[in-house]
Image 1 (tube, rainbow, N blue to C red):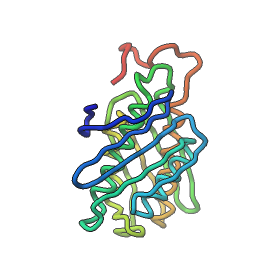
Image 2: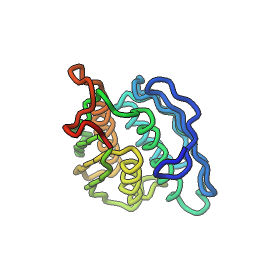
Image 3: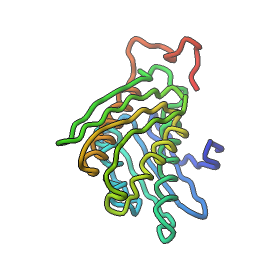
Image 4: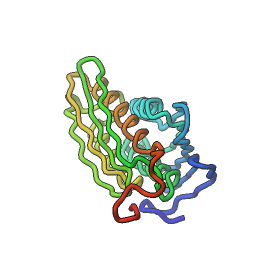
Length: 208
């Protein structure tokens, strides 16, 4: 099928569980996502700290998430991180379908020692991203920290999420982990069913 990121293969769909894949000359990515999972994560991108952030995101969002990315790391980490985020966003969009009955909005604040992060999201199909994470260094492990904002922008674009994520902290590891924990919890709340809602949460009568 054709998506905002080009050709995406949907290999499985059961309820809100999907498996998707995308291959280019730069990356080969396969992702399985179950929005209604238990937080099990099995992630291999070749970029250790990015794996750690995605694992925290899945655990605290209670998403079952498997990611296998092979990228051109001999060039740098950019394509690997960006494309993984694009395909992950597309997996959320596929799993949510028409988004009927979901809360649509979610927010969460998470501390980690001296760091604290706040995430506010709208999963209503309107892609926008505002990130304010004041990193102290250029990298955490092998992950260039400037790529975190780009990954979040990529995720927001293909998932159809308005995403506001900010935080403070003196330790980059703590700040990043708090941010992705908060994001997972906010998206979990937005994706949960609203028992009083029979259609989409929009006065327009449609989302997207």
